[in-house]
Length: 233
Image (cartoon, rainbow, N blue to C red):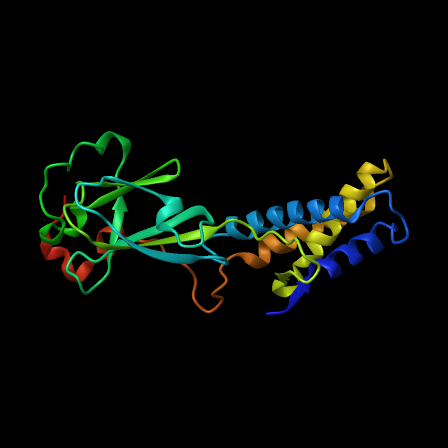
């Protein structure tokens, strides 16, 4: 995957807005425009159907009698944006896919017993604000894994790079150029049309990144099919 530096993004945005020799928009302000545009591109990609362009994982251990865990402490890079899934090693050796509980189920499983002996469908989680909660409350140190989408990268140094997936950086360049022209109160209509076309292209191309296999509807009851003898709630 190719990379493009902050300096290159800034240079191309100035070229696109015909402000190469102008100091009306300072580099520091243009950097902010670029990072805002990167965030917008980031959202376009993660909103694509189950694309998982930026998915990461982080592991942590529960503590006995501790129901909730701050995401800033359980995610190593402290860059959480959206949750994709939670696993747990209920038998010390293999990962089990956990399902979330609804708010109305918050007290349903609190006295179900030891995690290691519970059916996988009886251990649930819920994301509340910046905290992940479990029910029943963990009774021991159990290894868990969070799959998540991180926040968009922020470029600050000229040599910092953006992963330029299929030249999608063009969206960032055009959007930053629009912001520059808006500040100058100049006409942005041509660039606005270009941005709309780029947005359509990204939305259409980003779906189903695994082009060889289409996504299918997931049966949540079969996520741990070989262990369903544990029982289902």
